[in-house]
Length: 417
Image 1 (tube, one colour):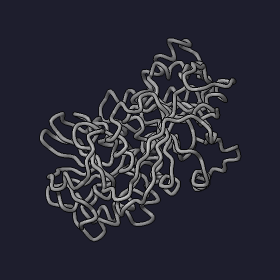
Image 2 (image 1 turned 60 degrees about the vertical axis):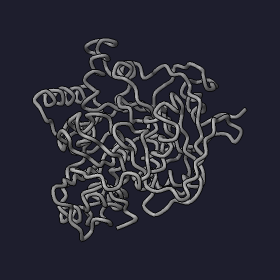
Image 3 (image 1 turned 180 degrees about the horizontal axis):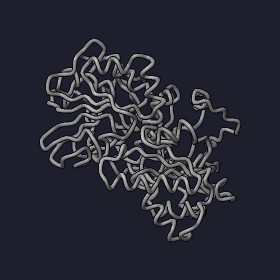
């Protein structure tokens, strides 16, 4: 029996041939921490390794300020001051305020196919779009990684999602992954490696692949993966990185659980409050009045997402009493949008364009909603209180639906405008 990509990566990282279900002590290639999770991780690191210890390899640790950046309280300012001092002391790379969302920075600058990557954030699984195995871990586990560069894992089984058919206009990777989550539920892929495959995925740009892998956690997945191919290599080259290693892929006779999805005729999908797996077609919820539209996050804040939204918003105005917030995922994505005139489109339409950060996504910084308000968001979670008041509501959509909704002030099918 052949090996899945996940099994191959863990075999390399542990130094022995493994299969799904094995427990392994694996060497970590990269570790990511950010302004919310780093303080607890550093505390655990000090307790494990000692007050004056050095991280196992400063070149493999990346820190980013993205969740509450710039600092939105004295406490977060003090945390960030401490983290800056730790980064300088340890000689680790710190992307300070304005650099972008940690996950986007990781795929732009650090992650390569075949790597084993951990991050102290659940959406670390996004990096699997580059053919890596990437997963979120708790701050205590991250303290162990910082100290030792190793971590125990159970090698996960893999689910292969065979996606076929033809995508309609204004239907994207976000809709595919929402439909999958709606079909199998929030626990349908618990501790599984979610491998997105098939003719449709082969044609998807990297931006859509990143979106899909980002949301693997929303169905319980341990990782999201797209097997590396020419699209992967082109993306790395666009980022100024030449990959010279071997592209590792699953063997043809590898063992997968297989689930098929025909996307032909599928309309844009919407995750309805307050569960990501509460998914319906846009036709079932269009007309719902909204107060805020958020286009951004690590899920849909890339240039390609902004371009989709700008094409719909060009020459239009945001509806009265609706707030449109647009946040590029990184400084690089911001500059691409700026040079192509997309930022001008958003501002002329009446939108607010913020610096690269998580923004309102986790409800810990600016752009929050009040009790009774409705947010339409391109982000990845619509839990109670996720973007502000627990009495507010969040609908998750793709960038085209978000832009159309901003114009009309109600949930709108972009195919009908």
